[in-house]
Image (cartoon, rainbow, N blue to C red; front, side, top):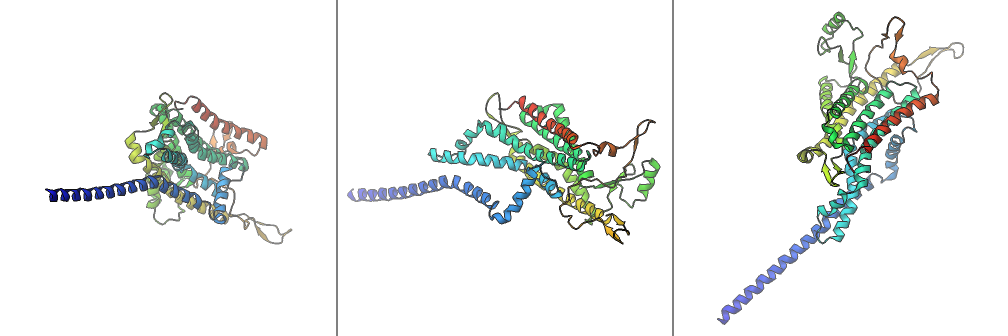
Length: 424
């Protein structure tokens, strides 16, 4: 009996030591997990913040270009500035995620230090009722890129003293901003037929602007009669899609394969609707309950939320391919058509009006090779869209007054939406 008791005591002592060892290992792993949970994301975020400013000599140019876009309309708008502004309009969802991160990190660290058991919910609870985040900063992430691009177009209108196409482009951003604003501050409006109609009209207008203005993708025949159209497309070497369709793919192209243009158009058309969805934050703070409410169905946000943001970045990338191509074609044509005049009395020869410093000319917006026409209105005369666009007969004060009206409409509609908001 004594031997059996000694053996049992020895086995119990061994099991106890093994249990203590396992407990110590588990405790150490739990401690490592508690430290790593906030430390790894914080380290990654800090490294990203440092990388965008260090080394400053190389990053200074980047931030200078961004400041020219953000500082609109106080600077002349070049193609580069407008291009950056367009890119920023596609980064709304990443900007919202960045703001979420800036709020979540200090709250997560606070929950980590104050709570014995660190959980994601402990860090997320303070964000659920944060008025500054949901009512000010997230809407600002949505409207700021659109506002900057809107002001750039107003500045272009002032410099060129022409309403079209600059105010037409500004109207595009105005429509997108107001659709997003009412969708943010009045979530129930997204089921209203009026909001849905505005959503589709704004998106289709963006697609139209991409095709005809930003890309100059289609050329319209200068003849408008039925027989002229039929003759044109029968002898157009396959460029026309249908006999009744008065447009064809532009003849000047840098990409050899025609299908590239059709694929980019189709993808851009579909993803334009997705891009409009990304303008609205994924969650909002309910005014009636004071709780976080999903903007869309939870399953939609879980599986398609991040994909929608990635799809918008992809759409902007392929959009940029045709945008830069059309800018190269347009500027090349301008150089070829540069005015050459002869003044033998003064100079005794020829001079070209084309200068050497053209790398940063003011940005222009142009469509395809469409012949301008006079539109008749009655027998009293004719009306030209170009004459309506011309502002050269106005002084600077009059032009600024008109542009201020546009800016007031943009901000005024946003204030109306915020005043009748259903969110805190």
